[in-house]
Length: 338
Length: 163
Image (cartoon, rainbow over all chains, first blue to last red; front, top):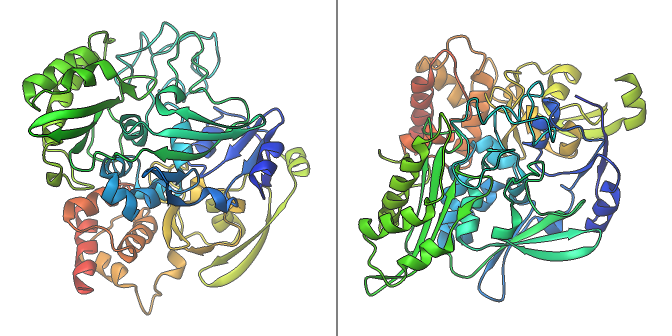
């Protein structure tokens, strides 16, 4: 654990100025950053505390019918917010499936997107890891890889992105608003995280010293037909082996629009629009969801301890599609019946 | 570390801990947990894993339960903190403390301060409508003695008292 400097930002522009130095990092809820610092995974020289920036702490309706989530609103406040429960229950479900009540009270929406992988080797400073120490190697490929990727992995990294919330944000086509030294911009959710390729040290496409200010949700929250199925080694406080977020718009018994995103299977929340297009105009049946699942998983490949996840993901996609037809059967905090 | 302190500076942190104003001067890397235990002598809050995995360090900050081990004290400047020392007294236990005794909800007791803070905050927030939901919402507090079933019983008993 290295000593670091600390500054409480009084304004957004002040925060961006204060962080521009080697080792400067933003501090939100701290639930991942402080842990990474304790393990010696990250060595911040200075933490710029954003928690005084009240302009990032609200949930507001947008003129286009969507909702803006402030980056500093806690995960729990978001999950239990009346607007989210009513219009984006899929998002609420995913948030409540992650971490614990204590962590969700501190963890912020912006920070959820920026959390690091929980790969055992990444978290062990004594192990080689291309993400933590580029060029040092990846022990997970021939080591313990139960939690690891089956899609989009590379020769240098097979880590997964651990968020549940982001699986819903991918399915909902959220947009990420960021600010930085060069001004503001908006990033489509599917462009925010990146595959490891030969640069696994980069989790996402944020520029240096950019920070997330808000996450915008489009008007359609798929509140009538949605489901989140998280399969894990214990029923609470564990990361997903495979998770699936499904949103359906159904008209006259046919799927008008489908969204399917997967967690726990790749370096990014995994979404394949070709599979969703295949479902358009079809009946929501197990057979049709199976076709979509086969499209999503066509390029999947596993390792010694995680090949089971390919079939698990296939079954989860089918089952969650059917669960989305009856969202009332789901209850926040309820465990999936196996 | 000495060199680090001089470079990083010492930050004034004002907290209201168990209804009492406390002022501290701390280097920025002191966690809320270490501030409570080492600087304020409030050792009721326990250090278990120190990595956010066990919940032993749970305290109530501005009505919400948080992990004091994953929080820098300086982040909470100006906040209200309730620790186990601020919940009930030996003469007058909090109803959840009484329920823990009645339901045999602890053995070694190390996780108990965190369990109590977590349960009190959950009940105050009005969450946990079913046994399954309470189990889920209490899953951030591990009990290595395995008293979890009785802990959930104790919480449900208090929830039913207030109906």
